[in-house]
Image 1 (tube, helix red, strand yellow):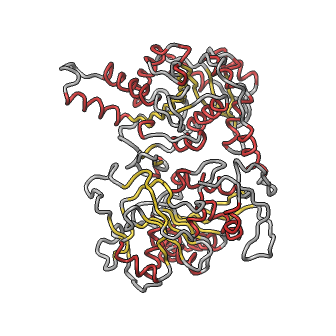
Image 2 (spheres, helix red, strand yellow):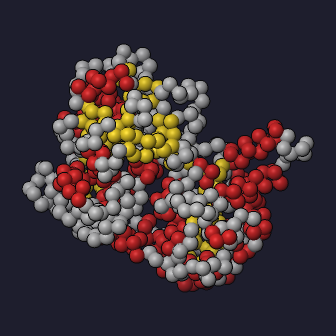
Amino acid sequence: MERGAGGRKMKYVLVTGGVVSGLGKGVTASSIGVVLKACGLRVTSIKIDPYLNTDAGTMSPFEHGEVFVLDDGGEVDLDLGNYERFLDITLTRDNNITTGKIYRSVIDKERKGDYLGKTVQVVPHITDAIKNWIERVSSIPVDGKKGPADVCVIELGGTVGDIESMPFIEALRQLSFSVGKENFCLIHVSLVPVLGVVGEQKTKPTQHSVRELRALGLTPDLLACRSAQPLRESTKEKLSQFCHVPVANILNIHDVPNIWHIPLLLRSQNAHEAILKQLDCLSIATPPDLKGWTIMAEAYDNLTNSVSVINNPSCYVPIFVFSSPTTDEGTIFLQVKIAMVGKYTGLTDSYLSVVKALLHACVSCSLKPSIQWIAASDLEDDSAKTTPEAHAVAWEALKSSSCILVPGGFGDRGVPGMILAAKYARENKVPYLGICLGMQISVIEISRHVLGLGKANSEEFDPETPHCVVIFMPEGSRTHMGSTMRLGSRRTFFKNPNCITSKLYKNSAYVDERHRHRYEVNPDFVGDLESAGLKFVGSDESGTRMEIVELQDHPYYIGVQFHPEFKSRPGKPSALFFGLILAATGQLQSYLNRISDSSTEAPR
């Protein structure tokens, strides 16, 4: 049995889902963690994904949303990003369990002969592997402190009844029995729909979902019911009667203005008391302190109608008055329009961390973000002929935005449109941030239109280009896709302490950010590009792998090979996203001028 903080037994909170997928189990699990952490408990998280993939690294963003990257290079489900942002913790690749990982570990042991000739079966060998994995990973500290956490929140992906999740359900049933009821709390997230014609909140889907769960050997201690409107008392009583859950343990997670309200919603319904009572932790917990979280949630709500000034330097860098280079001094901005020029704009979850990083930066500046989703292919010249209306709308959105962001991606689709967006930002001095592919796009654009290398390209898009300004990294694999990129936290050293990026990172000599790429800037072209005004102000420890570019004589034109969005947190925005929003509102220079004297906590 693993021990938690203070030598106590580890406490487990399992979050399952029923009826339909996409109910928000990840946000619910994260919010439960926030409330328990606010009660003085140390919290860690595990996400179980029943798919056969070893990790999320080779999955299409259209099918599974973004691939979130951890410090240790783990390519994991986007829900782990929610855990890190909500709980301000640093997880490991082992905090994401997949069927592929479990079966691989069991087969490897079988090949070594560890099972001593026994017939290897789902029960007990797969289920034992799952239990052992959970108990091992739950004891790994993720909050920078020594020793294991008090509580491990486990989210089981998919819905109850899926054939893929059956081994995990059985393993979790065994785990709940072995650790004891006082160390295990099951929260089942379900849907309470309203039929438009009748207008009645229907409990039958949840009843069936709970019945399915109980048939598999797990009984929920709490129900977290998703609904558009707050649940009526009669609905709760009906759910209690037919699901065998006390009314006090039926939580209602109805629609709210923003997800930062969910922890507050749980606290208002005394969810922490029900969970702590089930886990026998009332004696060691304190009343939940969510003052900072309340300020943050209400601040964003207030941005709908007015500029909100937050005097909480521990959470925000207050910006009181905004001015723009295109308006009179002292103009007040209520929102900022951000052009997101990408490949996967059809599914916003493909850029979830980028969206959250923009939100963190905007709220820190008392601004409401207005993201203009622009499919890069709609900006291309061919689009003007084939889909002229989409082409016109895309360019109108780009030109009406205060800044431009080109995020990461793979493949050549949409690349010409991204190059046009980067060219527009350069020529019209519109603030620009290129992330990973977005940095490589800026290198290609300047090579073509400033250096005059008309066929300059990336080896990824045109292996036969005569001017290969972006090359395949020599240590990469050309035969295997999974886990073969340059992944995880890597150190970038600033070559010029006076550059904008260094100042945004509080004049640090280096910065540690997360990477996910297999192509890099060709060092043979660095000299020519710098002569054209594109300065490489950051590199790796060797000095030959370029990490950060800045364009001279431009208010904000920055490209980075890493992904700063993965370490952005509510109240602690990424420095580069923060700088982009400041530049978009004409406040960057004044901020940089006073940054050395500021006592405010720096964005990371």
